Length: 386
Image (cartoon, rainbow, N blue to C red; front, top):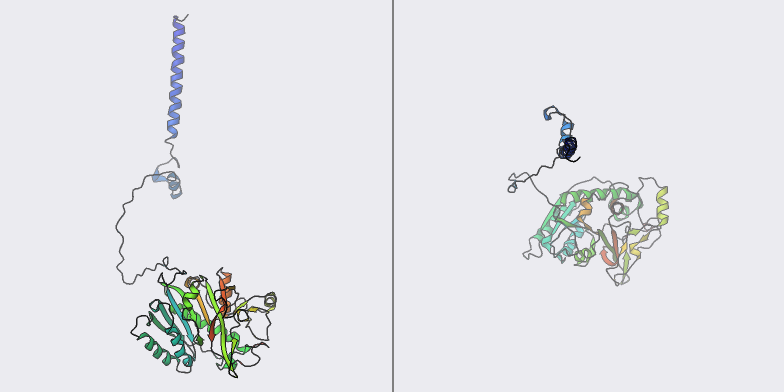
């Protein structure tokens, strides 16, 4: 049977069919490797979307031809790289630049002592820039300021002269009086704090440069402060940091250590409930009988004889002495010249910073001494200033 012609023909036909089937299957699988994605038409006839679909699965190798760096020679194109600018605890070692800002109005009587204290700062003076805003002054603030700057900057010792000094002149035409009694009355606080907030912002935006790591706000009427205050403060590595503000008052031959600044405080439940009843445009001011906030004040804590590095978290701060990481200001945190959460100027600044997630701290045992303003009775709402 094996040798019969019909069997041999059947076997040959079967083998041929198997070979043809295997060939067809292999061709179909190989054709899958060459499947063309996209519409079945010429590329010249494709729309933009069809062209994108057609090229979606292409992975053509790309070889980059790396050219030399492009050199910009135009004098009116500047490049600012803020990535290297840091605010660290090793500020001196890292040569971090500090900007000292001081707003001035009718301040001629305080400027000599102000510069004497700056002269004593131990932070390298070649890393410090000074900037002042003079506005609405009726005395010789501008003349005394320029004379003192000339005196300081002409020192032959390189450690004395500061890196630079800038004077910004801007009048805000504030109509409140500047005598002690009126300046510290409750009625003057809202307009006064808003005006000071504007002055601070004008000064900040006029003087802040890309290479500044820290901004140190320092009032002109500080009577005494530690020479190492900048180094002491940067060591805490806080976004915003303030000291305790006291003053000396001499009575009957005795030094009364008075508490000055009621603007640095910790919010209370009573204060939160009070704010819920206030018009959004009302600006709260501390230490006055008109509004009892029940807040805890930094001046009521601590003692300069204790550990100077002890910290407390604050919700509001005063403006006598503030150290701020420059990036806080660059992020848009400034001194509101309007009611922000019922606070303005430095207290509004603290509110705004905390809303943005920055840390606000005070040092209850680190005391900076302010001049004695001899505030009038009633301004403290029944509290004693000392």
